[in-house]
Amino acid sequence: MSTSQPRHMIRLDHKPQLFSFRVAALIFHQGYLLVNRSVTDRYWALPGGRAEIGESTEETILREIEEELHVKASIERLVWSPENFFAYGDYQAHEMAFYYQIRLDESFPFRESDIIHRVADGETEVEFCWLPATAKALRQNDLRPVFIADSIETLPTRHQHVIVREGNQPRTQE
Image (tube, rainbow, N blue to C red; front, top):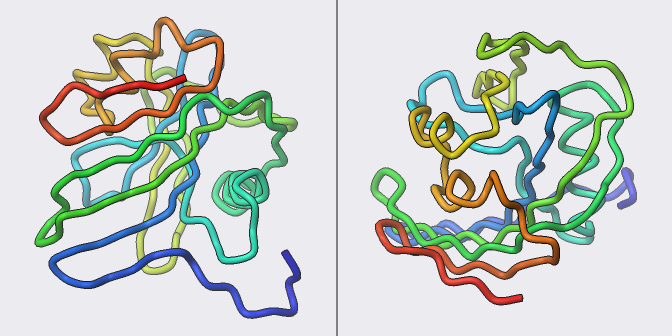
């Protein structure tokens, strides 16, 4: 995406409805998964962010990782493309997403279950940590969406389209 053009995140806010287009990363290290959250949230999510108009999802995840972690990364493969429907504050949210498995091309701190990095994302402070890449650990730490914890120990070998409605079992399509 050209840096001379204004940037516009793909997000439609029509309270009480909210739509966003998100791209996130599965980053593994020694049996751990990198997760993040706003310092004001109780739940964790995968690192990433909103796609921008005119930007591919691959460009989005590489940009987000560089902006948030300050390291270069490479895409290994697309794992899931979930449609998430969930309550978020006063909103009924609909999120389209692409989840890529990536590798970091530069060194990044690793300490088990400690906050290893913080970054300002607009007005929000975001913290990062490594959690064991097990269903039990991710459920105990409230990783969202929940289908990730349910699938983390046996990632699909091919891309899956997943429809997730909060409180229901996800439906997958290959």
